Length: 100
Image (tube, rainbow, N blue to C red):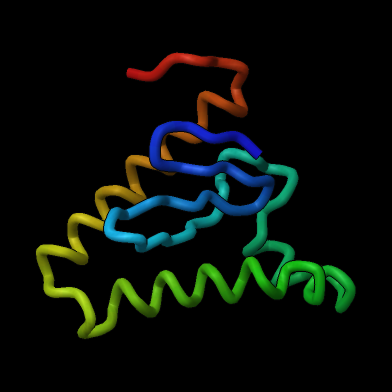
């Protein structure tokens, strides 16, 4: 687990603090060894069970982003936060410790 600013990077997911107690998760695309989407499509039942909570977290975040609980401006701001967190996670897996 790596903590950086408002993100927590785990092996399979990145958790993003969106403010106000809200947290969303996205796949950790920087870690090629644990591509959760590939695992859900092609891996065996034991892998599906092991990833169940991570997949639920992803679905919950996606559902909330699309729901009527956020207005369009809030949803766009959260999407920007998620994209920024994804971009910032890559240097940690490339051995870098600074960002653009």
